Each structure stands twice: as C-alpha cells, then as structure tokens.
Image (cartoon, rainbow, N blue to C red; front, side, top):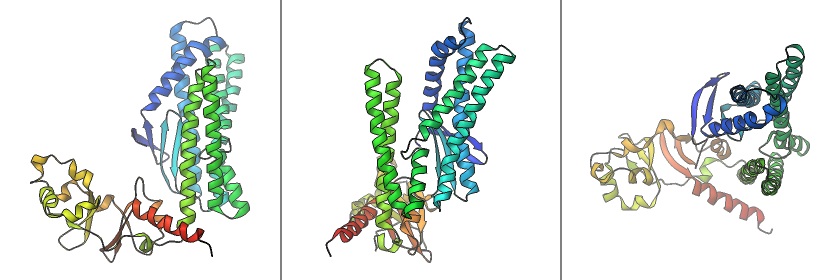
Length: 374
C-alpha cells in the first residue's frame, strides 16, 4: 500500500504502518477522551482522560494487529505464503497467497474474527474484574470500550462481503459446495459491492442526521465496494485465463535495446522503439538485464541524457518478474504487484514480454471465443 512504512517484523512477517494510522489514533483518542471515558467514569481531570484515551487508541491498534497476525500465522501453518501486514486508518490488511483448498480458506478467514471475539471477552471481563476488585473506574472504562470495539470489529468483519473475512468465509463455503472457485469469488465480490454501497447510503443518511460516524461508514463502504469490484473482475479474469501458458499471452518478437546506450542516443536513434512504453534491455552477451519505461527516461534531465545510460535508470532483472514460456499465466500474475511487465525467458534468452495490454487482449479474445455461438 502506497504511503506505508516498514517498521519491523511480527512472527517473522513484515509489518507496515500507513500514515493514516495517525489520523485514526487522533480521532479515536479525541472521541474517547471527550465523550466515552468521561461518560463511563465521571469525575476525573482532563489529563487523566487524555492519557486513558491515548492508551485506549493504541490498545485498539494492537488489537487490529493481533487480528491480522491470526490470519498471517494460520496462513503460514496452512502452507500459504504471507507477504506482509499493513495497519491503516480503516483497519488492517494482510497480503497472502491463494489458499489451495476451501478448508484452508475457511480456517484462515475465520481465525481473525475469532481472535477479535476472544479479545472482546478479555476486555469486557477484565473491565468487570478491575472495577470490582480494584475500583479503577477509568481503567475499567477503557477495557470495557476496548472489549466492545473488538466485538464490533469481529461482527463487521463477519459481514458476507469480500474482502471482509465474512466474504471469504462465504467464498470458501460456496467453493466447497460447488467446486468452482471462480464462481465463488465472483459471488463474494458482488456481495461485497452490494454491502459496500449499502454502507455508503447508510453512512450518508446518518451524517446528514448529525452523526459524525456516518462519514466514516461511508468511507469504509466506498473502500469495500471498490475492492470487491476489483476482486470480482479478477475472478472473471481467472476464469478466462485458467490453464493458459505464458507463451500464449506474450508478445514476440520483442523490441529490445542494448543496456549501454545513453538515454540521448536511444531517444535520437531508436524512433521505432519509442512506440513501446516498456523496453527490455540486453547485456553484451544478448541476455536480458532489466527493463526501462519511457516514463523513466523522461524523468532524466535533458542536461544529463548524454551521460546517463539506459541501465542506470532501468529496473534491474533482479527486481523484474521473470517467467518461462510453459508457466501458467495466472500463477505468474499472482506474483506481480502493479501493472504486469513480465519478461519471458527460455534458456537464458528473452523470447517474449507480457504487459497489461497483452493480458487484456488475450482475455477479450478468449471471452469472445467462449461467447461466440456454436
């Protein structure tokens, strides 16, 4: 997620924090310190409420982290790759690979809400114990609020809408019942779009009736609807490209350029190549060494283009997605973050390239062929 900073690892999994987390802490702290805690534990000073509100907001962030960690740890136990976890203003996101069975998806999806429900029980039970045994009303108020917040988090995540955990659970159940993964993904995605738009409508109405949380619900609904729509599109793409090898999607022959050319010489002498937005580079042995985009070249100041070579601004091969002609296109696309720019290499030599345009062209071709009357 853009705007996220890597701050360390949890259970060996990279943890990122988005800048919007600061907004979440401020909003939660303000609401807690000005309203919730004083209502539950009146008679204390502003400093006490401020400190308690800050600790409560940070404790909720820790709860979100435990929720996401439950997903990540269970995914690893089930043999599913985990890329990272990210905390941001609307909660947490754990990027994991594709589960191989409906049961694995069901268990991975369900453990997050289960962790939140356990935290809810600990928070509410802890609040009752602290108030009864020690009489610490402010601490009890924070724990009580934290418990109910985790209960709401679990309940919200169990809504039957992808990409929420409830949507994943529905997807796993449909997948297990029908045996059709893509159909289950599309159903969960459509459900997510519907639930997202309902949240937007409810949030807007609530906001106009004076509830500040309505705006927050509307933002969550927009995010949910957009993400669910993207997932439904990916499911449709998966259905169209199932079993298709890289060799069928790639463009060949490939327009390439020597990596040692200067930017100025490339722009002056290779006019035909400038019609392509992505140019693979070759080293002195004719082997691929990376790729460069016209955007990268345009960013080089005009005064430096005679000295800067293509390899100096290119994305090196170590950071490119590389595949063989026989690999499954969907498997390779699952390794790509962002627009696909995949170098197809056979025996150390470049034989093709797959870009977003190639994937779109092949998808439309296969759809038209599938939809054609027989």
